[in-house]
Image (cartoon, rainbow, N blue to C red; front, side):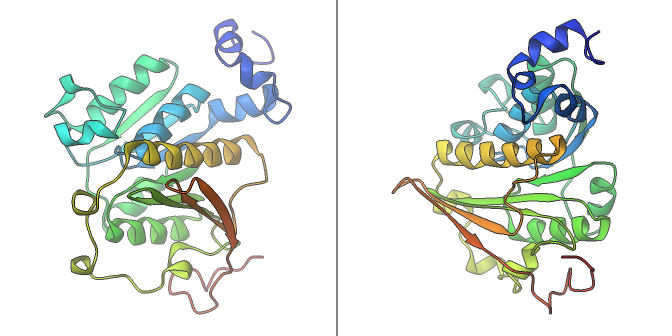
Amino acid sequence: MEHGLSEEQVKRYSRQLAMPAIGVEGQRKLLAGSVLVAGAGGLGSPVALYLAAAGVGTIGIADEDRVDVSNLQRQILHRTADIGIPKVESAARALTDLNPGVKVHKHPVTIESGNAGDLVRPYDLVVGAVDNLRARYVLNDACIEQRKPLVEAGVFRMEGLVTTIVPGKTPCYRCLFPVEPRPDTMLCPAEAGILGSVAGLVGCIQATEAIKILAGIETTLAGRLLVVNAQEMSFRTIDVNRSPNCAACAHLAGA
């Protein structure tokens, strides 16, 4: 054992251990950390894979769907042989194959107001990788209630948005988008389309944010909104502020 790490862990995570920003102390924090990945689709796939590769000790996967052939263009957790099985099952197998040292908790449920709090509570932070607006608002509200950091993102065709929400310190999802759109006014992913590699790009950014939070690296997207336009290959950040009238987080004290 070296500084609490096994010989296998020292070899597996050697490239991270060599980084001053992570090192042994940061790696130990990752191994002790837990993340709920809400959604095992186009965003959740790269998120979960990179969290497992980095050595995050416990990863929860919440998704009610089964693998469909149309998922395979972007949802890289799953394989052709997985078609028809629950996504949490194929996700758990892929993550365990990648890193047997990671504990994977499977939550084959639809995220809704009745269960979101219980899903969020056991984890250190949450990565929002859902593909419907109702679930995003529900997840935001649960994270605010439980005081859990939330790395939120969305993708549309060749564009993406990413932000990190720290309850009481940064704007929450409702601060940014206070009015929840009616479902019939929004295109679903099947109607709008999405480039798989763009979901991968945005998901990798989310995974990086989650790793930084767990490892104690302070510079994140907290208080900023990252706008990704892959068609133009442009990235810009917008400073965002809390809403004093936010229905979800206005009551929280903080910076």
